[in-house]
Image (cartoon, rainbow, N blue to C red; front, side):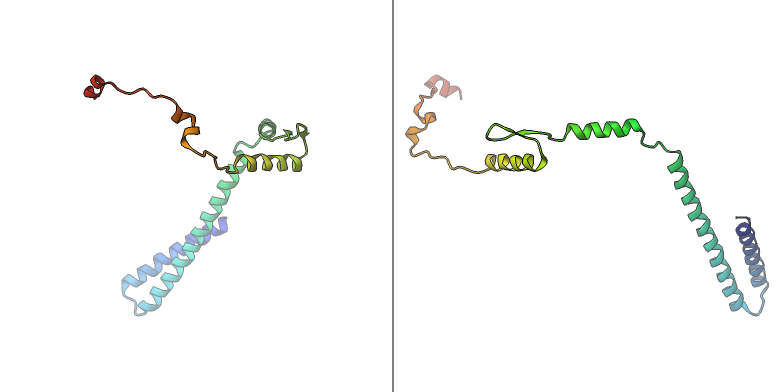
Length: 146
C-alpha cells in the first residue's frame, strides 16, 4: 500500500512539473500534453484500484460485523415451514392420504371438482321459487312520495 501511495505522489509531482514546463512555453507542447494525459490516466487507474479495494473492504467488514442467522432464527424458519406444509388430507372415500404424491393427487382432484362448470337446468320461470312469491308493491301515497 505504501508503494502505491509513493507511486501516486510521484505521479502527482510529475504532473505538476510537466504543467509548469507547459506554462513556461517550452517548444514541445504536444509532447508535454501527451505526457500529462498519460500521467493523469495512470493516476486515475491508481485511484480506481484504491476505490475498488475500499469497496471490497467495506463489504467484508459488513459481512463480518453484521448480524448473522442464529440457531433461533433457523428453528423459527423451520417451524413456519412445517406449519404451512400439508401433512395429511382426507380423501373422497373417507381415508387419509399422508404421502406427498397422494396428497397432491387428492388436492388436484378436489380443485378440479370445485372449478368444473355445471349449467343450471331451469326449464321455465314458473319452477323458479323467486318468481312464485308475491312481492310487496307501493301504494299510491308511497308512489307520490317517491
